[in-house]
Image (tube, rainbow, N blue to C red; front, side, top):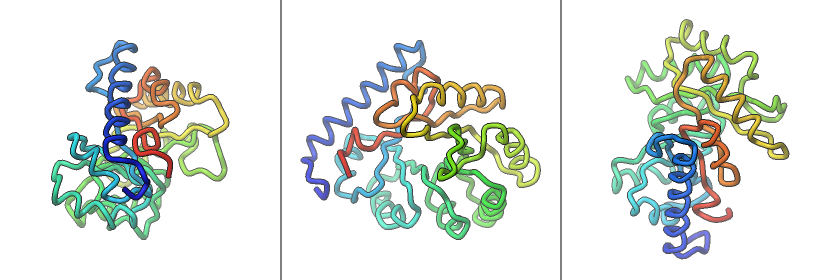
Length: 226
């Protein structure tokens, strides 16, 4: 394997993470099946992903459109049930490819992108599920709408562009306690009347589940260090 790990090691880590997701949901009084594990495969090659696919897992996350185009069409021929999430920034010049390839785009964050997605979904007659990325830490270097602007942007997506928005996504600041960010995003999701809540990664997904995450994005804890 390109990351140097034996397939059985990857399988074992995947099964452990799957069980931890299940237990965290149960401990929070939630139905475990209501929390989706998105296995993040950025920088890993197809052969690294196969052990998890062979375990029957279907939900995967990629950061870059170009990288996803390189490896997922072939894997989909072998595993047609694959559900692919875009969890990295999307440039407008990649919208055509993104709409064609991804089943969920979690990083809608500006009107220009929303307009491009609206035009392309109509052109292709294909509508991936869409989440708005919220910059809960107000970090200048990070994508996402400010929490105070989320409601206005949601209404613009709906009324001006005719998009259906399913929920919210966030990536808390690396050097801050994640729980306040998760709780703030959950409260915003509830206030806006949305359903999905994508938050939590390898180091903090159990905390995110306790705060209400419906999707957690786990890569390193399954596939190893990149």
